[in-house]
Image 1: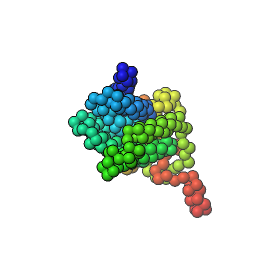
Image 2: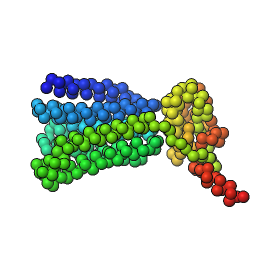
Image 3: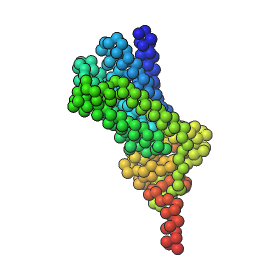
Image 4: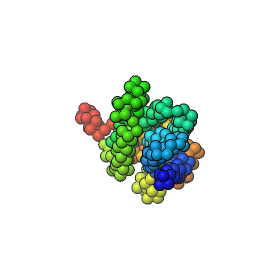
Length: 322
C-alpha cells in the first residue's frame, strides 16, 4: 500500500509541476512547447487515475475515488487545451471550462454515492472527449494526419462513454452487458489503448517534416509577412519566428476579422497594412522595433496569397488569354 501511495504522490507531483509551469503561459508564444507540456500532463493524469482507482479498490476511502475521477476527466480536457494552443488559439476560456468541469466532477464524486457519481463522471468524460474531437476537426494544424488520429480516437472514446451511461440505465449496472463491455476493466483497457495511439500521433506530429505547398500568388489585396525568414531564424531561432508569425496573424485578425492566413503571415484589407499591423503588434503584443522591421509587404515576396490561385490554375489562365 505504501508503494501505491508513493506512485500516487509521484503522479500528483509531476502533474502539479507541469501545470504550474504551463498554465501561466497560456496564450503566450511557443505553441509547440505548450502543446507538448499539456499533452504530457494529460498522459500523467491518465496514468495517475488508474493508480488512484487501484488504491480505492484496495483500501477504499473517498479521497482516492475523487482524485481518480478528476484525473480521468482532466486527461482528455487537457488534450483539448493542448490542441487549441497548438492551433494558435487563446486557451484561457477553454482552460476555465476545464477547471469548472473538473470541479463539478470532484464535488459530485465526493457528495453523491455510486453509481450516480459514476454516471456523472462518464458524461463529463464524454463532453471532454467530444470537445477534443471537435477542436481537432476545426484545427488548421499541419500535418493534419496526426491531429485527425487524435480527433478520431477522442470521438470514439466520447461515444463509448455515452454508451456506458445508456447501457447502465437501460440494462442495469450489474447486467452482464455492462460488466463485459463497460465496467472498470474494459474501460481501463480501452483508455490505455487510446493513450498509446494518441502518444504515437503526438510523436509523429512533433517530428513530422513540414508539408510541401504549391506555389501561390496574390492577385489582389494586401499581405504582411515575415520578410527574410532565414535571417530572422538565425537571429531569433525557428521556434521564436513561428511565434512571431502566430502573433502577426492574430494582429491581422484584430484589425480585419476576415483576414486570411498565408505562408509567413496574413492577408488583410486594411489600408497601409504593413504599417498598421506593425503598429498594432508593437502596442498590443509588445513587439520590439527590431522585430517590427521584419515585416514586409507580401507583394514583394513569393510566400503570400489573397485568394489562393495555384500554379496550374495560373497556367490555365495564361493559355486562355493566349
